[in-house]
Image (cartoon, rainbow, N blue to C red):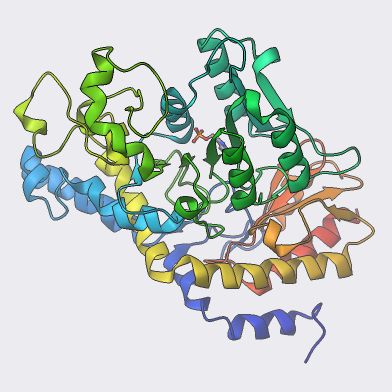
Length: 446
Ligand SMILES: Cc1ncc(COP(=O)(O)O)c(C=O)c1O
């Protein structure tokens, strides 16, 4: 067996990879060095590659629109009226939810806001809960969203926002420290909203333990799954989280700004029939099982059986679809369908199995070949990470990202010195990991 640092070793691993044919399902952008070859595309954590089936699914909807006009709502090949219903099973399976708990709608930050309308319900006075907890290195959009939610409720973010910081000299948060914080201060916390896989460090939080600790202290728990959906296996329902939202353009390969996902635990649907009561003011705000959650509503959130009776009052179904507002953008949902068909077929267990091997192989190569130039800040424990490794370069040559691009390698660089690489199991190969390390060696030695 050749040494792991030999290309033949990577080729051997590719030849025995049960998912190797999945790469053929995707367009891999060509290399800038040799346009006849695919690039080493290591940025699926930012924008995933295009499935080859996407174009046909969009064209089908364009053709049905051209040929049937409004009648495609009922008579299209995939009728538009119930189009979103196709996602119920695949979306729920992706995040470990039950059918009825997951829906595709809007965009990620919009979904976080709409869900916070329901789930961030600060209470005042002695013993009040009004704080939101995020990780210090939360993605800026989450940071802005929660601050604006606090202000919307008249709370100064300097008072109401808690940013969990790693210990000095460490890059990632310790689960025990999060649990400790919740134990000590959880009674003031209304909402814990963390990025399940942190965008910068690639740390996959112990979602089960953190959810349990936060629920134990009476907090609402929401997860931003932007870097987790399609990357790591989850059991949101069993873990007892309250809500989650995710985008679909990263590991889910649905295209820039693609339609996002939202998930709500089914225990929050029990009060759905009480909406009218809540609206009439008979029930004050609260989150108990018998009280409807307040939410912003639109006509796609009413019972489809009576939607076209055009009644002035909504009768929302007992499902997350009650949070839908508008009729879905079919041209934008078609790429999500193309992608979810792949995920549903391959399944997260098989993807995770390859992902563990591929990421570990890349880590092994970096340790062997780049130890003096790069530190890996992503947790070393595979249970605490997905497909991303965040690398801190000790010295960053000018134009690093461009120089790698010219080598045919596409990675993501975050100022001042973090290179994020994501060997995604659906389309990256072990030879890609090998080629990336060779490229980094060349560029970092100049
Ligand atoms: C963790 C996280 N949250 C939120 C966002 C913002 O997503 P959007 O622009 O789709 O609302 C991103 C985008 O990359 C992200 O990575």
